[in-house]
Length: 499
Image 1: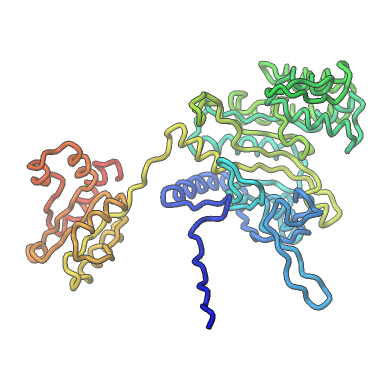
Image 2 (image 1 turned 60 degrees about the vertical axis):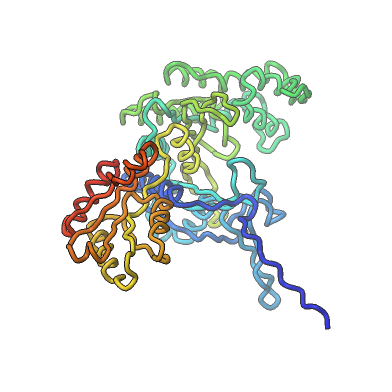
């Protein structure tokens, strides 16, 4: 008789590109999401929680490769129903594509403009890397159904307020604003106004490298080409020096004040009508922000913002953290971008055939958390619950009554639910839980109407340097009347900065 082959045990590991989050990580993120949600709500935006799964058809052009529905997203095909093939479904790639479907589906019931915010995980089937995961959180706010530049200015103001709400002070961030229409005007002056033209696409790709290679690098790549850092030669687009100059003028138009920046941009777009329209939009945004008290130290017109210009159709903005951190090699560098957004057309058109203007922003919550950790503004281990120890398993009802009293008083607490036979293991458990205090009530304490309260934080500090005799004196353990238990615990929490 053949030997039955055992089924191998599954490996206890997360899939590649995913990770688990524990305790403090989860609570820190939840706290930040609630902070941002308060700002969004204060600005009049309504919460929306859409489905995590969309049809691939609804995701549409937001997929990186529509010819291969599972490329870039996690997708699967439902079972066929008779002669009808099953639909392709996918985990949402971002929070913008679902908004398009929601607005098109419910537009008759929604106000116009529709102002919504959404927070939650998104999934991308892309190659993971350091700090780059296949599941991450987005935190978006969008206004759908208005072309007013007041909506764009409001998004910028709200973004600045969000950064300050989560703990990024003024001077440590900058919200920078540009406009795709201005770039279109520049391209028009260069004779590259045809959408989808090879030269135009090559110019857009080159402009996107501005933050890495600078103005001289962009000039070389637009014309003759250049050597990269490795010494390899990168072919240029082949434009003449005169053709390349409007792009350089556009990218370097930033001046000390918005008025001069706007004047430089007007010169860069020449006689282009669409370029002039873009400059006027930036001028309107600047005036609206100035009227609300947002100076250029917080929000400024900056033509060097080029990321996303291939996607957005009007104003585009980016929030950058300006303080320095140390990278993995100990080198100083600026933290960089934590948010981006802009105005885009065609959001709903695929569903309804009608163009609906929209503007929105997405905040990288995980990036913001990393920034606050890097600056030491959050972090450390979160205090755990007070642990009520079990001295007599037959008196569990008494211990549950104690913990109920603590919880009703607003204190975080739990009863030890493991094997109570070894009391030392109970205190080891409390240490592992980062508990600030332990409550002890044996038969003797119960009879005398008292409890023992052990300050575990103070005890740990004393244990670091105390002699055996000092440690035995237990200066971190207090006997208090049972009726004063809550007051004593509050006193311990306050002394340890946890009140």
